[in-house]
Image (cartoon, rainbow, N blue to C red; front, side, top):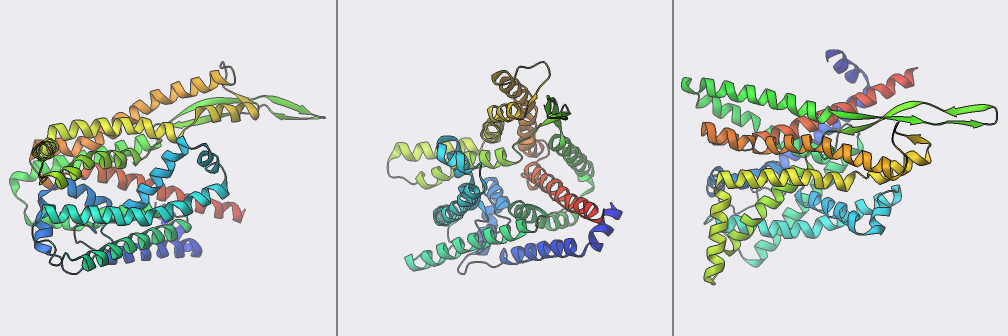
Length: 423
């Protein structure tokens, strides 16, 4: 590891790229501490301390929501816009064709950025309204002009973060959006450690040791699942062209255990939080049955058992759903047939496609089960220990480890390229 660090430091351009990324992350953390004027900070902290749902939203905003900062929505609108176009690719054939070409992908990226702006306005308005109704006296001035200024400021903050994320991605030492979420999660670690030290009691020693052990096991599990893959053997037919022979080689088709990454958890959180957010708007409705239904919805989702079961099912289902979106066995089978490749013992064409699909579904079952357990593990730990501060630990660990693995791989690939350049 130390040899790698020395190589990175000696490679001037790679060192400058990493320092550039770190500088952007510092700017991001600086922006997260610039609050919007006229906010009651005491009421805001009290609200986030008592609401687990808002804690999840705060995690994906990079910690900016807890301080009601100018980037309180984080990159959530951009992620939502990206998901919308990915889903449209399944429905609209024209968009599906565009996703296969570089120029088409560039257009879709441009449309995603444009869609981020109205989504930023809508999500910012919904979040401000939710926070106002959840905490009395949160905003001192709620006039139309002041609300307009806040919405423009928050949307501009989201666009700025989107730009910073793209600048980071251009350096090819990690995905910019993922690194921003990663930085937001890691930034809460020093405060958590400080609270544990200040409130430490000898009776909690074995509980804390248990949490550390479970965290280490979780990290090892995330690495194994992220790196795990099933290799399907591929044989290429030998071709004779003139007096020369081509092909005849053997290789493999890697099928990853977790093809979807952390996207299913982001999908599941969005779906699970949606009923509670809508119920918050309707709880004061004049129609009696609507108000009662909203109250019942909030009560059910505050029940840890019900919330955990729904959360697990959503993560499990979205893992299969997102894999179907991004992985197409028909296209793989078609490409293999065009290149003269085949799976030994399997006929080319539809039989190959069916075999790949069947194998993928079996592998994804393990990945979906693992993601579901990781998602609800913090709820189980919270119920067993009664410690509220670990409510989002599992999802945070999953994102942190996944981002670190991805970033390390990109840095190692750049080091490998320099070794080939030297040869």
